[in-house]
Amino acid sequence: MLKAVIFDFDGVLVDSELLHHQAFNLIFAQFNFQITTGEYFDRFLGLSDEELLRTIDKEKELFLSENQLEQLLHEKAHTFKNLALTQAAVIAGVPQFLKMLSDNKTPMAICSGALLPEIEMILKGAGLRNYFDVIVSAEQVKKGKPDPEGLLLALKLLNKLVRRSCGGKIQPYVVSEVEPSIKPENCIVIEDSHWGLEAARNAGMHSVAVTNSYPADQLKPSDKIIANLGELSLDNLHALCH
Image (cartoon, rainbow, N blue to C red):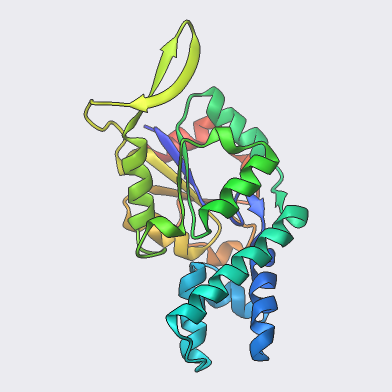
């Protein structure tokens, strides 16, 4: 039975992957190199900012100190923010899909390798923040995807929340003392990369892949592959959890 949906952020809810790539290249310009679009999508898209920078530091032999690494992370976040304020766009079909789940009282979470301020800024600007009960970002985990740590944390946080009903109106979530009711097999993870799909499998959750960033033949393992969230109905989602 479907009890929760957990979304990736970049490439699933908003069209922002290329903005991350652009932001990284703007800071890499000071070291006189760039990473190609193909290289970014093939190797780095699933990594957090810190994981990407540490990988580049090692491969390019930049020999960055921890202070330098921290400064670059700050520069990248600032650069991305400036780009996202004017260029980040909600992917077609997303608002309608979120409303459908909300109308069905389905708890929703985000599990992303992006930074929390970035996620909050874009969601609020798009008017989508209130749909999400839980947001797990890069700062909250030690291991990024395909490790399931982030997804399992999102599930743990969802299980601490119970929706109250009063007079037919849905009230804010409150802490519950009851036994957790959402199991991994009750969750559907929506992802756009094989890193995220592997994390879903490692967490024991079902998954739907959207072809926003990669072609269908690169989106495995997944229970279902779609081109747009508008293709999914509640019946489709419940069927995946049976």
